[in-house]
Length: 67
Image (cartoon, rainbow, N blue to C red; front, side, top):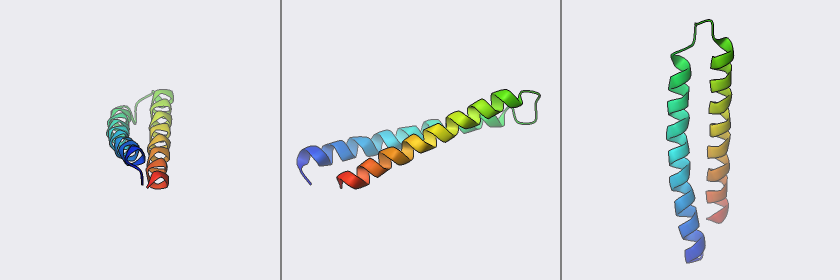
């Protein structure tokens, strides 16, 4: 792996870690509202969480491909 590819893969791995942390924070926000009359709000937060999970997986796939 070239130095440039290795550097990019390392930076992507760091970004994936940050996305995972944000995903966890978003999930915790949804938990506060589960069981309330705001099912629409909870659903929107869960959708955002799923999108962050998808982004994390895509970034990690790029890391593996680069490696």
